Image 1 (cartoon, rainbow, N blue to C red):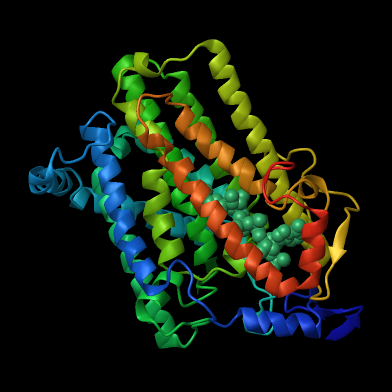
Image 2 (cartoon, helix red, strand yellow):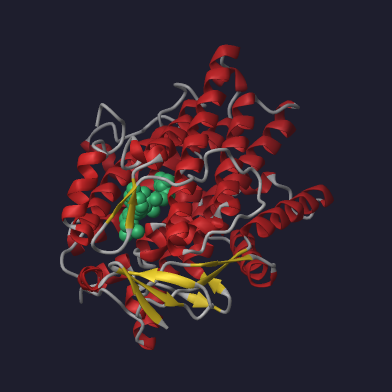
Length: 473
Ligand code: NDP
């Protein structure tokens, strides 16, 4: 059933709710945006460099951190290049081999998370109308909260019973990282071929390697599981959190106590994991879900990149004397306060925008998950009605800048490095890499919005002037 209200159209979805779809003009721009028109990431050459460069960089940083006391080593001279590479390879082949134990642990986690996602009850959230599916909406079963708590209980039982000690995660970091990389590559290529075979590809460039990198399918699903959303939460942030727990257990075994720095990482990673789980119903409204395809870019990064390159501080702390990174009490207070404030802005800004979109769609309901922070939902917020049909929020955190969530997220990433002080530069990789990602992602997003909303986007930018930090940039 369809009726016109102003420029937008209201349709009754298959789920029985009324959702809003774009105007005719909006449909034209959506159609344009669903076609490949230009290469991103430097085109085929750029993506080959990324696909080979990142795994290499991850190995290099891990070797420096674990075997060279966190110092960025390099060949002493031109003559030393070959011996240097041989030394690097020796570390990889011995301490990062994809051994049977690592396969068992990593594939066990994947299988368990898939099983939980399949069987656990969850909150049903309707996604945004998908242009390539004729504005059909997809339902998302949001059961990450149950799954995360079930995983935590299972991990506690395995650890206490001695079946699988948490310390084994960090002890097998190199082996697990290689297995994760193989899975990342395997799933990226496998999904590409599967999508082509089933004819579900969208926005293809025609260049094989570029399409593997960007992905072929938009909404990969198995039974009740949306694989893209599942992978975004259930693997990377679960590993990152348990890696921190593993580091804490390791410290406890070695020193008899857990340092405030390690406790900080447990809190920081739990906050991130929990935020993704408790606010999972907000994820279908993010750009990763409604626009980004499921390719190497997302798959590799979630299987291997995030879990094995964001928590170098934990790996360092698990094997180094706590005296090296002990701070004064005021410094600890400043560190924890910065994390919690940044988390507050990140959590509430994401929820303000997502819930605003749900209000617009008529799909907003409230979940009882913990913690629900004040100012997460705006009452009667100001917005711009675009000719496309969508609305752009100009209230709450979104009145101060166009990416308040990116700024807060980046500050959190910086604290994950600051927690180690100046012992080693390697844990700062996350914040350095992340700022590049966010600036690049912001550019891609704004270009897309400029096409999608035209003059309305210009109007929005004249009202919300700053990209990141009000008054500065
Ligand atoms: P956003 O949540 O900013 O989503 C961007 C989209 O939201 C735009 O394309 C537009 O889509 C819509 N939008 C933008 N401004 C407004 C507005 N004022 N009102 C209404 N809609 C608006 O970004 P992402 O989805 O990229 O990121 C989500 C989070 O994930 C961020 O916090 C980011 O930091 C985090 N992230 C973390 C990563 C990590 O590795 N730690 C990696 C990547 C992201 P449209 O109008 O078409 O609906």
